[in-house]
Length: 309
Image (cartoon, rainbow, N blue to C red; front, side, top):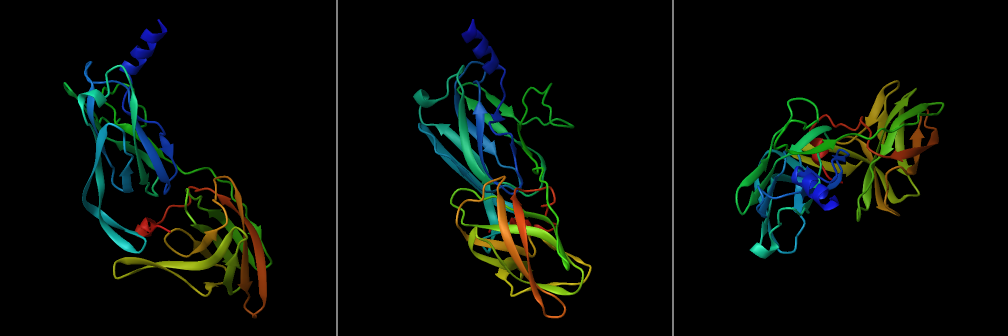
């Protein structure tokens, strides 16, 4: 009886992502789970169509299956490591090498890939085309509103890209107020990351330098477009006009933390020391603790979000 119930459940399962939610701008490992064949026949090919805004998608090899990645010209190029990317992966395909390695009906398996997600939040639907020895299942239906797939016969795979809820602390000094501070978490092997915040000076001041025990090098950086290429460079200081909030954000001014001593994991606090100069030439410093998370305020206003640190 238990086996019968398990098979019945699988027979009514859809093509779904094992991790159905992720944070914007993160490096996401996705896995499409296939729970049954096509009307009783084995699955021989799985195609996953990559939505616009996903960057550098790579398939994970699978024993007994050949893997292909199809590229196409992008409607909106993006910048990665100082280079403008005009062509990227739009479709992944896993094909069973033989009848013996096909996925039998009544069993399930996962087809994995890695990608860089867009900064924009919201529901994203991935079309999955399942080809079997006999027939196809085209998982492509999207609900008219909301996220529920109830009533859909062939729903697409849902990925909900949503910002984390982050409580930010405001740090006040006699001359500056620092608010909405955060640092982007890193992924395995990443040795640099960005830190962001709002700084409001009561009188004309300058941010002279930054430092952190978490990084070997900390610099104030500026990102700007030059001849259709997004460039990032260190700047000696940052002007803080009296009474005006200067926002350090993705795609603009920000703090770069390089040669990280350890990975910056979600939920940790990263200490940062900011050194300032006031209107009279006097120097002072402010200590802040940055949350390692991506808050909802981290939405760039231009194409600058496509630059990878």
